[in-house]
Amino acid sequence: MELAKRFDKQKPSGMVRVFQAIDNMHDVLNLSIGEPDFVTEPDIVDAAAKAAKEGFTHYPPLQGYLDVREAVCAYWERHHGFKATPDEVCMTVGGLHIPWLAFGALLNPGDEVMLIEPYFTPYESQIRDNGGVPVCIKTREENNFAPSIEELRASATSRTRAIILNYPGNPSGRVAARKQLEEIAEFAEERDLIVISDEIYESMVFNGTHTCFANIPGMKERTLLASGLSKSHCMTGWRIGYVFAPKNVINKMCVLSSYQTYGVNDLSQKAACYALNTQDDKVKERAKVFGERMKAVEARLNAMKGVKCHPAEGAFYLFPDISGTGLTSEDFTWRLLDEEHVGVIPGSAFGATGEGYIRIACTQSMEVLTEAMNKMNEFCMKLSK
Ligand code: PMP
Image 1 (cartoon, helix red, strand yellow):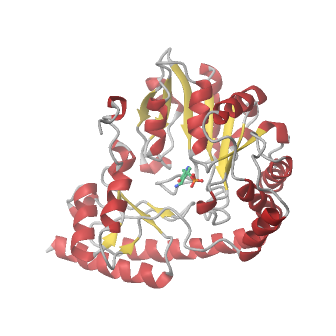
Image 2: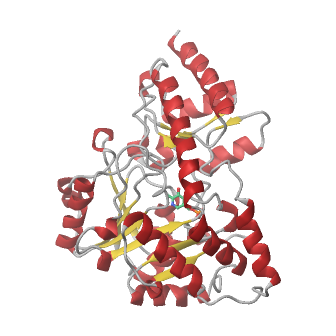
Image 3: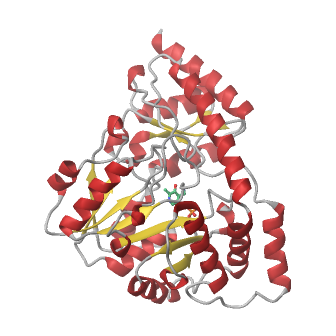
């Protein structure tokens, strides 16, 4: 069957290529997966089952049930002091659905969207597929992979319409300092930009403090705050996310979703409502486990020849610099997979700034992480001979 030409250029991303290769192998120590290894808590599952028995088996309201949107607001007020009302929230099919709806609602053809490298890979094609033009902004490790106002000004044009931020970052695991975000806010105001702030890793900060971008004075009105329960509540498979945005944007997103998904799975919404209202201690407990793993892996990485790793800050990713081994990110990744059966993601999959780095997800038990580090250490020793 002949395929549509408009997606000819859309090939599996640098991340997906690794996932596919690992799927076809046995006994891989897989540090490439960006999802918690913990299963969803059983009482969350029970809440979904109860909802099903109570008859929540029909089409959902397009914007999401009021009780879950209230729970989203209460969670953000409790954890980050961010105040919003349920009419400023829309439930979505995972966090990944948010930029799609946002770009659909906001971009005119040719509008430029600033993408801060290293960036979460799907943003780029989502911008393009909605008629926008991604403009990659290079950053430096010593600045937490966050751009300065000068760097942003240098890439701005009359077509710049939006900027997408992601701190704590995937793949960098870095947390932007409030001062850095304030500079970005100043720039957004100066150029009258929309900001999409993907804060899906807000609950996992080990070093520094998470700043909710929309809390910076003047920013709520121009910000879409994106998040979800995939990471914080170990609910990747439930496909449940949410976005805070100005009401006219929420209304447009609902119209767009009425042609695509017609709302979000009832049971996932009810499970999310229960989870957001009852699981704060569990979220904290798990974040502590990720923090401990990251610290242990970071120490191992820094003892390897040719590898340098910045201390863990947030999310569950480490993004070590492997340029000292003399290999490119891709060569390092594929050889590590072939020769040692350890799966990581090449930094170059996240934009040019990522060259020279690899992404390691600490989403495996300490035993698996230790074994993977033993093998990676052997690999680096071999390279240095
Ligand atoms: N944003 C970022 C930065 C992510 O890392 C991910 C998942 N890896 C998502 C959004 C999407 O999350 P979800 O599984 O809820 O669609």
